[in-house]
Image (cartoon, rainbow, N blue to C red; front, side, top):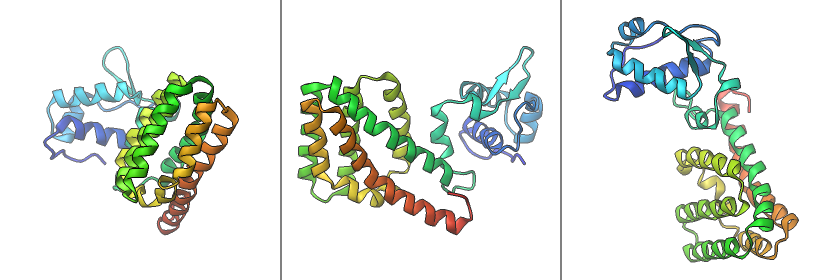
Length: 245
């Protein structure tokens, strides 16, 4: 059921309620949203807030606005883009969505190694120099996981730049936004990965020497450290909540 909006950011609250209803399946794909007037009455907001929320839903490809103003719910799995990921990390209850987190980790593990391979064949010395500089900062950070986490993002951002693949760049931007929302939660789980300076150095060296296969292998080993820890935590979380992992 929709609830009366009490927040100050009214259009945001309307958007979130409607988004959650669509993503959860409470509002089925192909169904028409209630008319603007009806939404205003149910939610207790003005028409401007509803129209702004509908505009955002259309931009997110969650609804299709037809001629005459009727808004039809779309199947987000078929229509939406990566930007929706950041909104799906948390369930409406505030709990982590385990299958979504699992999907994000799998995507990270798929893109990272291939981006490293491409960076080795396309990035050359400029990319390697940036990677070396970041690794030097990581070495200076010692065991400060928060700093290492931030520097790791810089490292992988340089890898993505070096691979010269726009699709990977845009996907990485989305993954980074999602990652930053849960950065404090996953930081302890990534400790082994964040402190594996030998792997970071080896990856930078492989990029410098143009060894694509070696760079891919090292990157897979590096991100695999974090993936294993996060998967273990997700399995425990799924076990406690009864949600499939």
